[in-house]
Each structure stands twice: as structure tokens, then as C-alpha cells.
Length: 147
Image 1 (cartoon, rainbow, N blue to C red):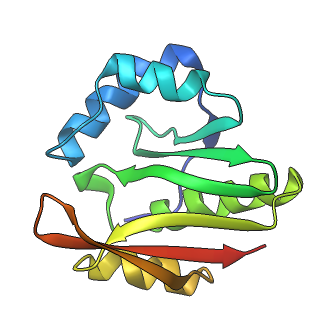
Image 2 (image 1 turned 30 degrees about the horizontal axis):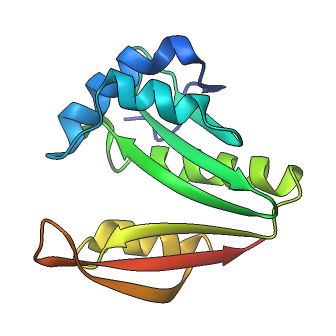
């Protein structure tokens, strides 16, 4: 089983239906096509798609001045544990760095051990906590990576 992503490509507005479908598979509280289109239309937003056959995952981010935020990151269940999330996040960090960003932020569920391990390995550190952020019972940890 290969750990490599076939190709990472920029997300375009035409990808909104695909992204919404993938988001629906991975999250209980998912974003629909209109929400995806709205995110992609926001100033400073960008996305990257792990485009295998079929697509494997994606990341959406937003840049504001010299800071960036990961809005969502997912890998479809059959493709997890192959390094795809790390490849997507690494590419997003590189794009943000190239755009002059000094720090990237994200939120992760406090009980998401796999996510926390990934983010820690890529240099993210906890800088905050949002109590009961996810579904009213799970805290969100706010993480930051200096670029």
C-alpha cells in the first residue's frame, strides 16, 4: 500500500460539489455546496486537493494579513494513515509561508489523538482552548505553528 499522494492540486470553485460530498462523509456537521462555494469566494482563501483516483482528501485555509487559519482538513476513510493529511498540511504551510504568512492556526477536538500527533509533528503548539466547542461536550484546542 503506497503512502504517497498521487498529486496535490489547487482547489477551484468548480470543486465545491466534490468538497461538500467529501465533507459530508467525514463530518456529522458538514458543510454543503453553498458553504464550500462561500469559503472559496472569501478573500485570502485557498484550498488543496489530494487528487488520486478517486480524490483522497483536501484542506481549506484562509490568509488574513500575515496569519493563516486551517478552516477544514480531511482525508476520506479508505485513504487514512497514508501520509495524505501530512502532505496536504505541509503543502498548505508552504503556500502560506510563500505568501508571507508568519503563523498558521487551527482548531482540533481535544480527543482527536491522531490529529494532535500530526499537528505536533508539523510544529503546531497549543495556544488556547475553547470549552465545549464541538457538539457541546468536546473542547477544541487552538494550535499555532510559527512559519
